[in-house]
Image 1: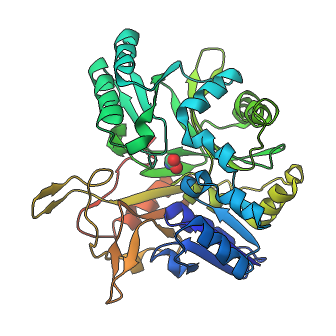
Image 2: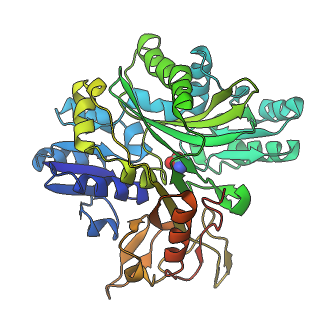
Amino acid sequence: MKVLVIGSGGRDHSIAWKFTRSPRVGKVFVAHGNGGIARTATCVNLKTIEEMADFAERERIDLTFVGPEKPLSSGIVDLFEGRGLNIIGPSQRASRLESSKCDTKVMLRELGIPVPEFAVFSEPEPARRYVRQVGHPVVVKADGLAAGKGSLVCSTVDEGEKAVHEIMEQRVFGDAGNRVDIEKRLYGRELSFFCFTDGTSIVPMVAAQDYKRARDNDEGKNTGGMGSYSPHPWLDEHLVGTIMTRVAEPLIRGVREKYGFVYRGILYLGLMLVDEGSEIVPYVLEINIRLGDPEAQVILPRLETDLVDICEAILTGRLQDIQPVWDPRFRLCLIATSGPVKGKKGWYKGYPERYRIGAPIDGLELIDPGCLVFHSGTDLDGDGRWITTGGRVLCIVSTGDTLAAAREIAYTEMGKISFEGLYYRSDIGKE
Ligand code: GLY
C-alpha cells in the first residue's frame, strides 16, 4: 500500500513514521517534508493541492493523510474526494471549525457546549470598549489561521487593548485579524483531547499536555507548542465520558443535524478543565481539525493499533468497530527551537519571534536509539551536515514508566544536541 502524508513539521514526521510501522504499508511519501523527514520517507516537492492530487493519481496512492490545517482549509479533501482519492481529514466547510474562531464559538454556544464568556468584533474601537467594560483578564484571538500564535493572553485591561491594536490595526496576523473573539480568561488545567470520527461514530484517543508559551512557567509569547507529554494526569474514564457527552458528541451530531455538514477525520479539542466544585467542566478554548504539533509526537508512539486500519474505518463509516489499543507508558516530547542570537544588525529574539536559520546542528548521532527524533525544521547542507531551517527545529521523544523517568531521559538526550541559539524550555513535564 502507498501512503502520502501532507506536511513538513515534527507532527507530520511522526505521522509518516507511524505509517512506516504498518505491515500493510510498502511506501510512504511526504509532501513536502524536510531534510529529517527524508530519512524516514520519500519527500516530494509538491506546492499546491492540485499538484498533490495529480501526484496521488499518478502514483496510485491508496491513502492520503493531512497533517496541517492550511491544505484542509484550502479544500484538499473536497478536491481529492472529487477525484475518487482516499483522504483523511475534514472537508473545507468542516475545516471552518478551525479557520474561523469567531463563527465556531457562536456555533458551540448555540449547541449548548461549554465555552468561556465571549464576544466577537469586526472593528477595533468596540473591541477595546468591551475589554474596558468587562474589566477582567481576557484572551484576544484572531479569527483566522495564525500558525497557533493568534491567541493573546492578557492579564490587564492595557494588555487587552494592546492585543486588539496588534491584531486589528497593526495586522500582525494579516487578514486573520479581520475579526477578533474576545474571551473571559479561564483558570484551570489545559488539556488537548483528540478523537477519530467518521462523521457519526466518535472514538476518543488519549490526551496530551501541550506547552504553548515560549518560556518556563508558562511565560512569554504563545508558540505552536514547545513540548508535550501523554498520558495526561487528569484524564480518567469519567472525564473522557464527560468530554464525550458534553463536547464531542453534541458537536459531531450538531454540525450534521443542525448545520448540515459532516465532520470526518481527526477532531482536536483544546479544553480548559475548570473545577467548579461538584464537577470538572471542559470548556472549549479552540477546535482544531487535525492532530496537534507537538501532541502527535507523543500520542502516535503510544498507538498500538495499525493507523491504516483506523483510517479505513473512517473512510468506510465503520469506526464503531475499532477499539484502539494504547501503550500506557509515558511519552515526553521536548522541542529544540532557534532561540536568541546576535546578528550583524542586533539581536534575533528567537522563536516565536524573528529567528535565524542555517546554524549547523551537532550531536544528532549521539541520541539514544530508544528515543525518537522528529524533525520540525532541518536540512542537510552541501557537506552533509545537519542545519536548522525553522523556528522549531527538532523534537526528542522519550519513553518512561513514569513522567519523571521520561522527562529525565528527554533532557539528558537534548543535552547532547548543540547549535547556535539552541533554546528549549526547562520545565516540560515538571509537575
Ligand atoms: N499544539 C498546538 C497545535 O497544534 O495547534
